Length: 262
Image 1 (cartoon, rainbow, N blue to C red):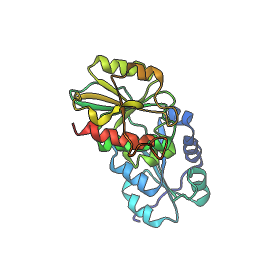
Image 2 (cartoon, rainbow, N blue to C red):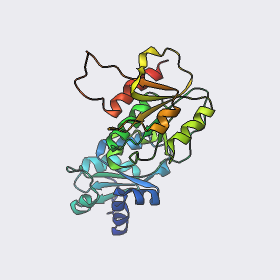
Image 3 (spheres, helix red, strand yellow):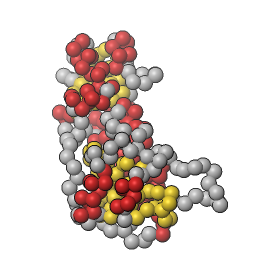
Image 4 (cartoon, helix red, strand yellow):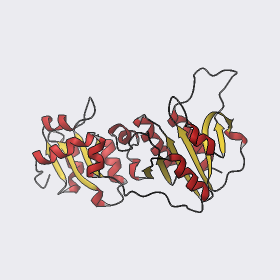
């Protein structure tokens, strides 16, 4: 190490430790990421350097400290007590990143675009995985309806595997209202539903389309189902399924693969 790494100050620790709560993430416009892989992937996909606020590394983690040495001025060391206050996992690696949220703003229509909408998806792990999957399949944006877990929740950030900056996402209070706006711009709204039609039976998909994924237990709310142009279902093998339903993020992946390659 060719330069001295300063310790994280008490003031910064107090400020950053509060980011485990949504109200402080919203207030500060920042979020905390944990783990070497998650932090490195976020840095690899960072749209602007200023979105990085601080990198905090356990003072005993020399290899991680060396890897982050290029971020001089934003790199801080921390002892085990400080790391324990920041940790949001049971087995922390002692690597943390504080980042600014991506710029907000709702989605503006494009000639060809794929949008994912989440209706009360409450598991942050599902939200993060869907964001990652949406980025993989080239979705333009993810709309988070009311009740959906915060994409900047620590578990969601880890599940997104660093892709939180790779696709636009924004919250709305009334998902039905936002979907009606998109329909007015020529979007077809397809809602995943067990009462829907086999998704493979639809051969004609417009260039502007929205896929709606619903709550893990209750599915999509009635207001959204009522306005949906199509209800799509993923068929199961055999006469009866061995499970009640698919995981929300798995359903999203299967349907996104279909909607991407049309």
